[in-house]
Length: 161
Length: 80
Image (cartoon, rainbow over all chains, first blue to last red; front, side, top):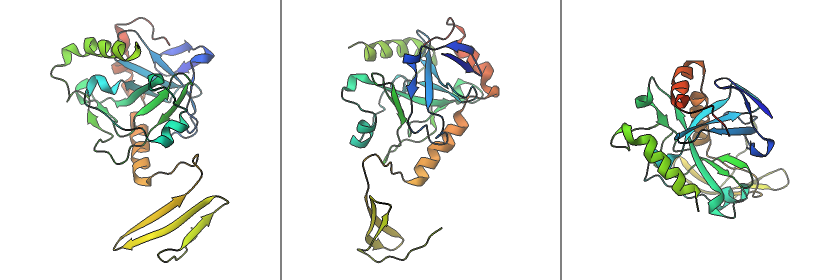
């Protein structure tokens, strides 16, 4: 289908590539169908609602910027996402841009968990958790220059079994 | 809003299959037991709201256009 986006114009997304969020996301409960727009060797991606051009989120792989990030996915969430194989799971977090990347924050309290096999997604609400919705994106990395490269390695390491 | 008074050990039924029981009352904290079907999602409201607020703030608006283009500029057309 053709997806209208505020920032990238019209994008062709094969129907099989859509991701269903059966409950939307907190604050966007009625926004249920998304497309994950990725480009090769870019640690960032864009999660676009396909029915509303104005609802899209910059997202990233949290393990790239926060190598120690971890959480347990409770059984209820695993059931709702119909996860049977951890290898099907992709985790992304939303990034809120400030004036520049140095101001950007990531929401580590509400990770977006996607079962890529089922094309099912949920924004998980972690509890208890020491994470917040605004963790400085660049705090965990020594220098910003190597980000893209390390992100790339991480992505390949995680997606190639 | 419907207001009901309950004592420790008493419960409330909501619909056919949701049961809330007051398990413990201590000072300002009450402990609730919740029986509900597995597909009923249950959240601590302030955390759900905090994430909702963060989402509303994170939606990439027109003001973010320049930054976004810059982030994706080095690549060809973004694609699935």
